[in-house]
Amino acid sequence: MAALGARVRMLVRGGGLLAGHEPFAGQHVTEALERAGVRVDLRAEVTDRSRKRAADTGLGRIHGGEITIRTNSPDGASMFEADEILVATGRQPRLDGLGLESLGLTSEDIAAGRLPDWLCAVGDASVEAPLTHWGQYRARVLGAQIRARALGEEAEEIQEYVPAPRSSTAIRSRLGGTD
Image 1: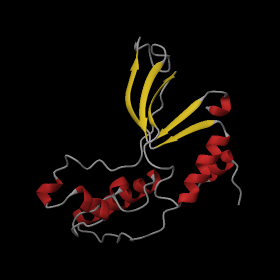
Image 2: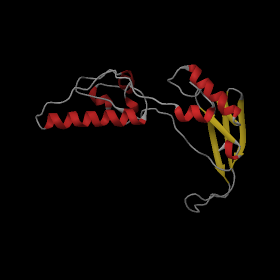
Image 3: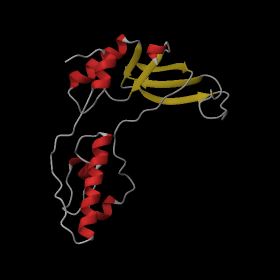
Image 4: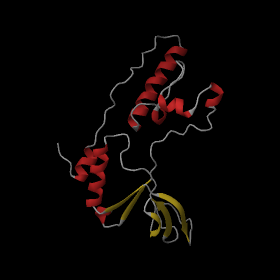
């Protein structure tokens, strides 16, 4: 959006981008975004937002004017106005309310990969790469294994600790990275 002339402000709750990757990768992306005109506010928490004339005018239409956004960060509280908000959430598993305690487990057990032999975690709840394509792949493999066992067939063993394919071509090409 910044490349199209919009002023863009990115509010990041954590201390950097690309958590879970090497710190230099997040720093490189942050610097490239800033060079492209994006303001990146780290450790920022949205404390309030309001729109004076909020109205549902249909998908893709302006919904009542500017939004006032209040934030809090180590630099203090601030307020600014924006035309629109784009929300992108990080990959945190949503395990609360699943009844894990009835199995003698906690969400911390799941996040650490401490699971009974009969229980598997996939996607963001697993200790594997938090990537959509990887979670989908592992869910398909696990589903095939469950099906085979239910039919009394030989189940393909799930390979553990397989490197997940990653590609940053889109990020690198847009932000100027090279091999």
